[in-house]
Image (cartoon, rainbow, N blue to C red):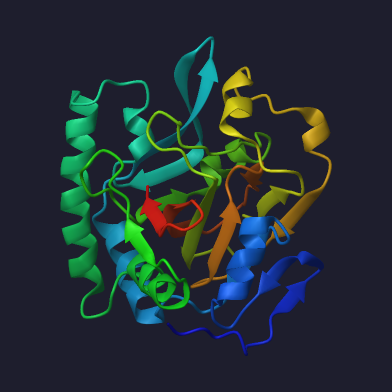
Length: 281
């Protein structure tokens, strides 16, 4: 197992956000414990791979709205907050019976998109696969693609934001939390690897508060988070090819921007003590 622990982390404006040359075990432990809110690794993605992905996304990809789920009167309700996607997300199956058309589509699309992304990135590995391999080296239990329902899940969905709708996320802090009926996780993180960033704006906002438990998330009416948990926002200006990892059970949002594009490859990462990191999206 390799660990780049000798690399001295740097801080950006606050000790709650650390910047590393390489991921290391001790920084991941700080993220899990809540000692830090975000890990940043600049120049994580191979620049040529990012350019190939950006070209295909711009020229050939069919983008759809990437909705976010909330719970209203016990029902799953999907909302559009300005993010588009290439690939089918697992939250499209929420509230649907296992074996439903939504589940069949998700797993079929997962297999298809793995092949598509692999072929675009070849001979390099896709950025999210590169991250998974790094975690396999530095984390004692490693990292795997999740298979919560017995089938391999997709890792590395493409998220795209554009000036016309980017502002929709800015005023709606939200949390992401896998339903306990699918898998019980101690923590849920997200990894975004930025393939393109706007010249200004598009900051990631994360609030310095305790991560919400799943039971708390289900009690929220719609997208209304408790105001007293939204008092300490921290801003991260993503950079092209940078990796940013946060705990998605903490409120977060994205600022709007006036020009350019904000494109990333993303995966959720589930954590339970003594188990590998689980990747899915």
